Image 1 (cartoon, rainbow, N blue to C red):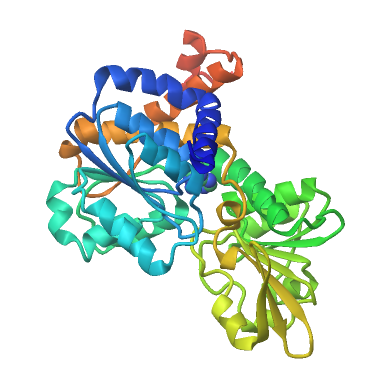
Image 2 (tube, protein in one colour):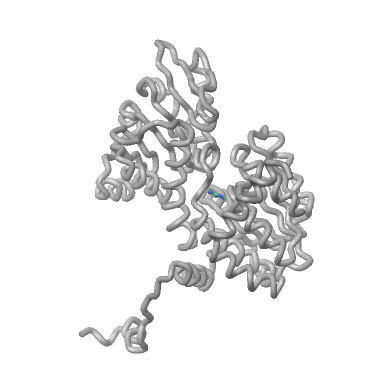
Length: 411
Ligand code: ADE
C-alpha cells in the first residue's frame, strides 16, 4: 500500500470514529437504502469528514461522484483512499481553476438526481452551461452561507429550477459549524501557515456574522487584542457589547498584525487599505470565495512576490514594506488547516444526509424554491448529539406545554 493511501485510510478511519451522529443515521440508511438507483453529485471540500459522508451515501445505495468546491481544500491522501474504496473522486490539492471547473463537470456528467453543494458551483453550472441535465435533478442541498446567497438570488429572479434545502441556516449547522467550526479551524489554519504568536497581537476580524463571531471569540481566547469591522449596525453593537473594539476597516487596517475576512462579500480589503497596513501584516480569508482580500490589487502594487512558506506569499511593496497573504486568499481553514473539527462536521453532515434522504424520498413533490431544513431533522440531530455527549435534558410536563400554548393563564 502506498504511504499516501495508508495516510488517507487512517484519516477516514479517525474521522469515522468521531462522527457518532452520522454513524447512527448510517445504521438506518443502510437498512432502508433510500438512494438505491439514484445518482448523487457532490461538490464539497474533499477531506476526511466529507469522505465519510460520501461513503455513507454510497452504502445507502447511491452512485456517488465527488469533486471539491475549492481548488485548495483537497486532501490528496483522502482522495487516494476514497478512490481505493471505489468512490469516483475528482479533486486534487493546488488544482488550477480550469481543472477545478473540469472536475465539477465530471461530477455533472453523472447526471445527478440529488446534488450536494458547498458554495453553489454545481447548482450554478446546472442552471447555465448544463441545463440539459436539469430534468434529472430532484433537488439539492446547499451547505454554506455564500451558496445560499447565490441560490436565493436565483430564486428571487425566478430562475431556480429545483428545490434546494438551506442546510446552512439549520440551527444544528450554523450555530456550531459557522461559529465554533470556523472559529477553531481558522485559528488552526493561521497557526499552521505562519507558526506565529497570536497573544498580544492586534487581530482584525472583518464581519460579525456567525463565522466572524467564532473567529473573534477564539482569537481573543488565544490572547490577541481583537478588533471587529462590520457594516450591519446591530451586529456592530453586538460586537461592541461582546467586548471587542469596533471600527471602520480604514482605521482597523492600519493597526492589524493579523487581518482576517469573514464577510462573504467582495473587496473588503483593497488597495486603499493595503497602502496603509503595517509592515509584516498577515492577511487571511475565512469566507468561501477568494474575493474578500483583493489579491489582484496586491499583485499590482507589489514590486516582488515570493512564497516564503507552504501557504504564505510575501508581497514586497514600494518603500520596503512586506505583507503576507495566506493560502492565496482562499479560505484559510481548509487551504492551510484541516477544516472544521470532526465532531462539528459530524452534525453538519448528519443534516446533509437527512436532507438528501428527504430529497430522495419526497423531493419529487417539492417545489422549485429554497426550503428550510425541517425542524424535526434539526431536532433529531440535536438529540443524537446529546446522546453521544452523554447529556440528559428535561422534557416539558403536559401542564408546562399547555401554559406555553395559552394566553389566559397569566399568574
Ligand atoms: N470540511 C468539509 N467541509 C467543510 C466546510 N464546509 N468547512 C470546513 N471544514 C469542512
